[in-house]
Length: 264
Image: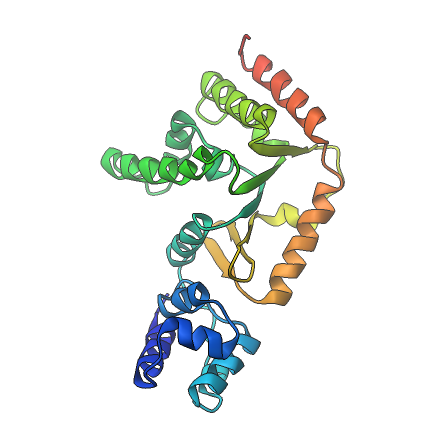
């Protein structure tokens, strides 16, 4: 996604002789939020843009020329990936595949081998390393708090074969039983929900507004609008209300792993 907006904001801030912290104080925002906007990783809300205009004396330029739709899925995902590393809470909904931060190496390799046209082995290896690096956030025993809401379809589709699936599912069981990740399964018998249209990732932070990332086939979007993020949070909560509780979900995962051939 073009960073013209962020670059223009930075130029106006520097022309005014302000540091990011000074602008943040004047606009009642956080320094990290300003940094993300300038780097093109986030788009300010209308209200944030109006406060920036007031702080910089730029009339209504920043609020009138907020970036519109048009970024690529790669742009949006990269922005979401960077935000994921700073989040204090992440709630994922997976419709087809296990969420990236929970994937094992062999499962990730199988998923990343499904692209068309096919990736070269070297390119796939690079993507696998990137995906496994994302999971490093789970090495901290507390932060971020991670909830994974899985459509049961995720467990039933044998990605990479039975052995890979058994290993992947037991990885999630161990994370769930240790308390590091809450895993909930939305059973196939549950009513259809608005969330069943694609993948959703919700992120919260200590020092900036929450955000959301949604993805479907060749479509990805990072959402900054407070109204949109709140609506996606409500959609997630609605689906979670029909999901199995943690204990029941882990029991289903264990049973499914055994069906794939896992033995304790």
